Image 1 (cartoon, rainbow, N blue to C red):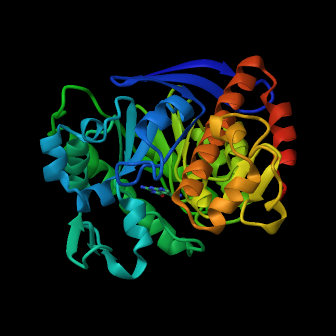
Image 2 (cartoon, rainbow, N blue to C red):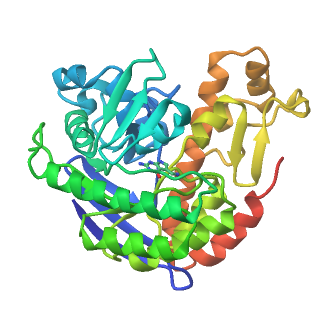
Image 3 (tube, helix red, strand yellow):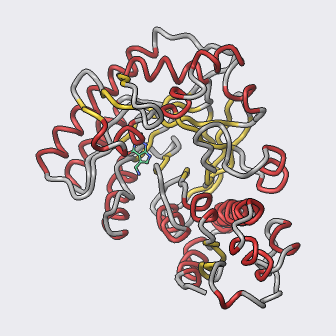
Length: 376
Ligand code: PRF
């Protein structure tokens, strides 16, 4: 994997770069649409490619391991072939999904025992078998197995957990060395910084992660319920330590405003279920704030969904029609809203990139943050 810096914003720590992998280039900053089980929910691969056009999407080890299972993915020749997606894929390691299971898992030094949310069967994830599973899924970027701490989290727990995540990281690295690539293209491995909301732990974790000299680095354990200001403070500490010449990925973040603020702190990559999940609940993101399309006020508003017209759905359908689809609970409503939101998120990171390269990102970002902080 290659990372070429193309420009830096003079008034913030934002940067624009190009990542190159065997499945093509990724222009950063980038938002990666989430395709948990091998589909970006509600969006055809053709629409994804032609209308939303991301260089990379994200998928999940936990879900793909449970269904269709690695046996099937191996037979298919990897996830790219299985789902007919020839651009980049990143897989999360399952550290976060397992954490979300709360009562249905037990974390030990050896690994995590968890109960499947599908059939209640028991499984065991270790740093080693998670690397094997990710080799078989075959994503271009694979993630370390970590523990995402909850918020709030007491200092002692956060510290112990961080050290375990570090030991797990070395187990991931040692094991990966023994595992050849499976499908003729290479996979980049990203370790994950933890440390909850404690600056000293975050600094220590970032130093440790940086010392492993991976091709890219991630920041986990944020956007788990802490105030945005705390998240930004942590990102700032970590970005000041992680190397300049490698991509930085902030996991599971966030709102459009969170994304712009974190780009300003030096983050290059993001993923979040928010644009897709909220779309299915009728929440639309726009450059002028968010809209709840189910609201009665849109009942006879025949103006386009979004005058900006980023994707074709924005101008082909009216707010009144989209509201109607939600009212009668039609599938198409969720599809249209999903295409709109993903189109908007990708527009936002592309626009951020343009402004970084033009040198006026900070001014644009401050204006956008104000403008988007509204409910329409
Ligand atoms: N770890 C992993 N995946 C994640 C997170 C994490 O901490 C987060 C936290 N926001 C989202 N996804 N492995």
